[in-house]
Image 1 (cartoon, one colour):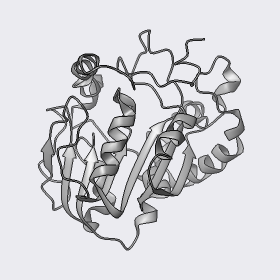
Image 2: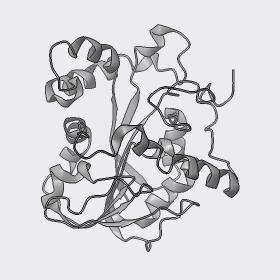
Image 3: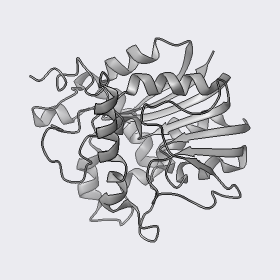
Amino acid sequence: MNPYLNGKSLYGDDFTIDEIENWYNQEKEAYANLGNKNTETYWYGYHALNKLHGFNYLKGKHFNNVLGLGAAWGHEFEVIIDQINNLYIIEPSDQLRSERVGNIKPVYIAPAISGTINYPDNYFDLVTSLGTLHHIPNISYVIAELYRVTKKDGYILIREPIISMGDWTKPRPGLTIHERGIPLNIFRDILAKYPLQIINEGLCFTMTAFFQRIWINLSNSPIYTFKSYILLDKWLSKLFYWNLQYHATHKLHRVAPQSVFYVLKKL
């Protein structure tokens, strides 16, 4: 099997700057062009998931400077906006930007092609990357940058798929051209390079697509928007963790968690 599909290597992590630039240009507006740029029809449905696996660990904390990598309109911050003074968002798309998130006017900047984050060391109290890294080639470097710009005792929240998302060398309906998951073993190896306290490693999205196909006959709201389902999913993900395969070659391989949610504290 392709070494990238068997989960032993991370595709794109060793790209040259020219390869990274080509990837960036292809991904820049790709997510928006999948139908996510219409503010009248787009609806953010991950609040229940983000709260259970991430923001619940930040209760009672206040953050002066907060960074969202690839946070688009900033919807992910709505549930904690009262805990934030200043919000900065790195977003490649010119079409996914908000004038205000709650009472805050976010500061938007475009990402550097190299992945360098153009802010000083130890600048942010909280950094989030929820569903962004798997769109980026040089993930190891970008995680190093997330660590660099986070203050001591600051928090980093990361949610990403840990399965291949199919063979990305072929067209995949509903996905951008390059996005692929990050093998959990590689994720753990990258994070182990830094003095970080892992407050939570929450596995999630076990058979969610299967349950959603049934649920759609009962409700217009996706099943993962409900706290009760997210709690069930948390249990199922622990139960079937043993079956995790980066690239599924059999239907039974899909009975396993498909994403991970990290809550990290910089030591």
